[in-house]
Length: 153
Image (cartoon, rainbow, N blue to C red):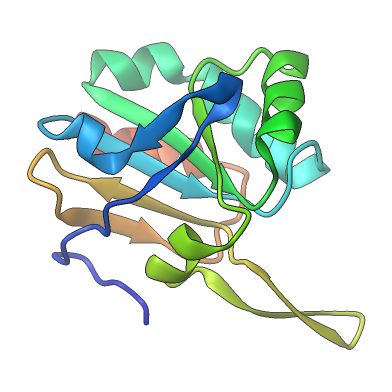
């Protein structure tokens, strides 16, 4: 089931990097950018992660918190975060619970092979917990700038 703008964002509680536990409820009263990406340390995912990293000061000064979500485990997230000096939280969704709740765990196809995976997507969640913006099938170049424009407005 896909969410729509105006829907209440599904809460989640999951393992974060460095052994932390994160919940969307931890950020009530803040604007939260939740972005879903397929895999740590791959070209597109790294470019997106680094783009968020490079714009973190602008995002936080606009009052936003960023959380990256992928099906990778915490150990993978820790290595990815350290390798690229990522300055925001990554959440492990190994059982796809969060991805399914947000409607981004979908059937994909590559070279004629069908498989289940994350559709690169981003959600902006207002301080009251409602989704104000969503991007599906995200193309990485220029995406963080689009998110910035929404968060700053």
